[in-house]
Amino acid sequence: MMNINIQSLHFDATDKLKEFIQKKVTKLEKYSDDILIAEVILKVVKPETKMNKEASIKLSVKNDDLFANKTAESFEEAIDLCAEALEKQLVKYKEKAQAK
Image (spheres, rainbow, N blue to C red):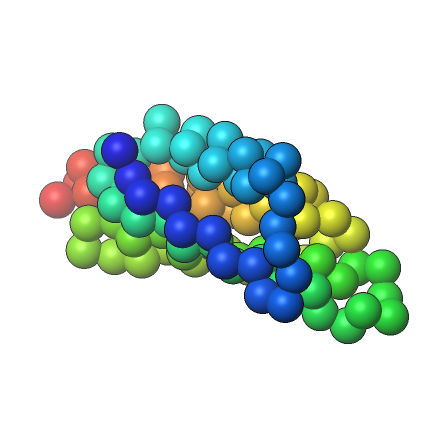
């Protein structure tokens, strides 16, 4: 079971948002058993624009780190986009690992 660390910079993430992140990130485990730690960082960038919610997720896997950073209108949307990007990276990571 991986550890999930969630940091929200300059605001307090709601429990609902944290639960959403936990669910999304935990689903990534079905792509690889090698995920050790997931670090999620949330921040608001450019408050004057709509697309100002930035999420980044770093997955520490055996012998590597996978990373995704996305900006959207909501943190949920940004997390969704990060999760999609990481799914693809995990599939490639798994293929590489199996090829060895």
